[in-house]
Image (cartoon, rainbow, N blue to C red; front, side, top):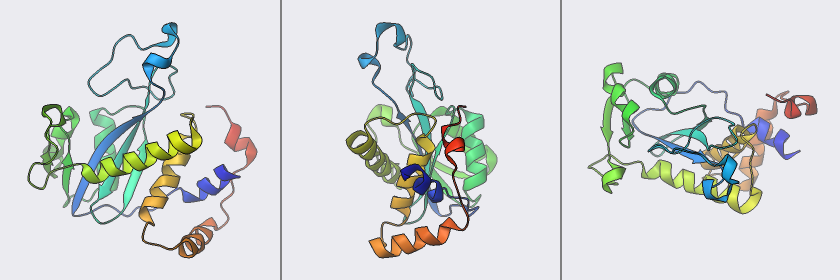
Length: 202
């Protein structure tokens, strides 16, 4: 039932983020040290162990948030340049200023015509003028607390449902519970997640 409720949270809008937009990545999954020795990741990269659905890696999520506005959180297979720039083109207006950390693929943003500023988290820099990813980081904290404290474990197959739920909570944070329910109910509009679809193995 909860998965069917989350299914309605899925955001199908084509509305692009404008103005000041932060973009960041998070990684969801078990700690490598808690796994059996045979399943531990042999090598780790600077951005964490990536690989959608892999048993020995964390699943990456890309977040894009307009300061004072809407947020998107999208589960991806990687955080490489092709993936990130595809999300930028789809969800961020060309006139926006994109604030990120020092992750290498973001250096492509000016080539696509976007204004870009960054902070260097590796050098313990968290604010550089207007540049920061603090808004995105606060959402990651919200998402991870929910997963760790309430659900404890979320499979990669269903992770996008949980991202949709917490994105909806974030995007409607100024609504009352009653207003949220009315907004959610208006979104149902014939949407139906069958059990067969839910358990389908991918």
